[in-house]
Each structure stands twice: as structure tokens, then as C-alpha cells.
Amino acid sequence: MAKLARFRKRRSTEDILLDAFVYIFLICLIVVTLYPFLNTVAVSFNDGLDSLKGGIYLWPRKFTTFNYRMLLARPQIYQAVKVTLARTVLSTVLGVFSTAILAYTISRKEFVLRKFISTIYVITLYVNGGLIPTYFVYRFLGLTNSFWVYIWPAILHAFNLIIVRTYISGLPESLIESAKIDGAGEFTIFLRIIFPLIKPVLAVVALFTAVAAWNSWFDVFVYNPMKPELSTLAYELQKVLASAQQMSTSMELAMSRAAAGANEVTPRAIRATMTVIVTVPIACIYPFLQKYFVHGLTLGGVKE
Image 1 (cartoon, rainbow, N blue to C red):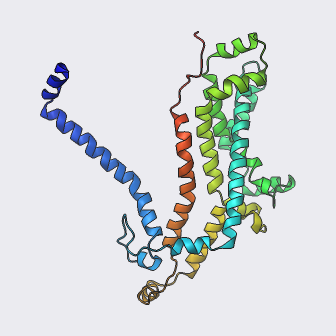
Image 2 (image 1 turned 180 degrees about the vertical axis):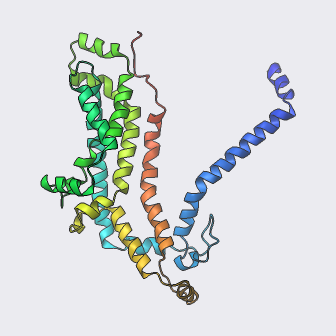
Image 3 (image 1 turned 90 degrees about the horizontal axis):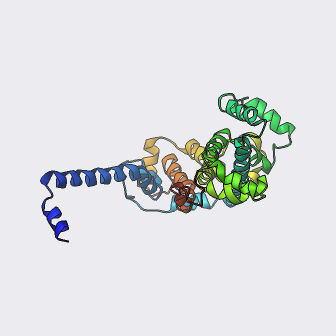
């Protein structure tokens, strides 16, 4: 205790200034990082016509929930939420499991076609058939005007596959050899040994897949335009934004309506409300996956 007290007394002015600089820098970094989202939330809860005047930063000037009520009052939104949830859950679960088991397969040295399959998937990162050939392939497979057009193309992605394969290749080979000596098969080794050890990288893949599925809307526009019951949340919000942009008029008319006290949505208010609605569910999921990002390979091990 005496040594600690003397150490505290010996703290120089330079140390105090350095600590102060670090704390000020971190506070500024937090403000810069959070300000865009906080400003978006403030605009979403502000009157749409009043937002055209500008000057809204961290708090709404004329608080209202009209933007949210207008969006959530659309009957198509709730069906779109169901489709989006089903799409996100199915594509994430199937995508993570399929990516993991294929990555384990091509990481095994005894698998003859591992280099060929890896090369094919790497090529897809640089070469794309284009929208029109892809559309004809999906139509030939019977995926257009179907819910499964959201699921099957999203099951495997070359980037996720390479990440998981590289992670598995870094695991100790002696773990697999010990399991084989004990009589375990390949599928048992994958489920009992490999799968628990690769949870950190699978959490990253799951987050990437879920975010992509939740925010996707262009595939609805291309493959399911005549199926309103298969519309997704992002696509419905895009239609609302497009209609708001078409209905928006000149600044003078908007200001006159604001002076008359009329409630009217604007593209900026709709865009901010859409961002909050789409972002909040993903932000709520992230804390449950965060622990896996820093989780090391501590689930057992064998010394080389």
C-alpha cells in the first residue's frame, strides 16, 4: 500500500495530461461514431415538414410519432415482416451449417477434390454471370415467384466459405487424429469437435448472412414482383420512400403546409424512419453474438 501511495504521488504532469488527452479523444470518438445514428433517430421522431428547415441534431424540435404510425399503418408491412423473419432465420441457419460442413470437407487433406472445389468458389468472387443469365437460371430451376428464391442462393457464399476454411485449417490436427483413434467418424468429429471450436467465426458468418437477408430488397423486385405476399420489409419500405419522393413538391408548398399545421411525410423523414426500423432488430441481435467474437480456442486442446 505504501508503494502504491508513493507511485500515485510521483505521477508527473505529463502523465496527467496524457490521460486527459486519451479520455477526451475517446469521448470525441464516441460522439463522432454515434452522432449519425442519433441524428437519424431525431429526424425520424420529428415532424416531416419541420425537418425541411434543418437545424435538427440530437433531439427532435417538433416531436411526433406520425412517421412511424404512417409506416406501420400499412397492412403489407406485417406480412412483409413475417416473410423477412422467416427468410432471415432460414437462410442464416442453413447458410451457417452448410458453410461450416463444406469448409470442413475442403479443409481435409485427404479429400481429393478440395483444390478444385476451392478454386471454383474463388472464381465466383471475381466472375459473375450477370443479372439476366441469373434470372433465367432461377426461372429454369423454378425459383422465381417462390419463397425459396430467397433461401437457396444465400446458403453458400464464397467469402464466408474461405473465412471458415481458413479458421478450420488453423486448428490442431492432433485433435482430429485423437478422435479417429477413438473410433469417431468424420461427421461425429465435425459435430463434437470442430463445430464447437469454430463458433467465433460462425458467429461472424451468421451476422453477415442475417444482415444481408434482412436488408435485401432487390431480389424481391427482380424475382417476385407479382407476389405481394412474398414481399419483404426492406422492399415495402423502399416503395414507401419512392411514393414519398413522387408526392413531394416544391419547398414553398411544403413550407405553406407546415405553416397550416398539416402533417405530411417527406423523403428525409421516411428515410430516417426506415433506417431506424431496419437497424434496430439487427442491433438487438448483435449483443448475443458479441461474446463469440472474442472467444478464443479454449474448448480443450492437445499439446503438439
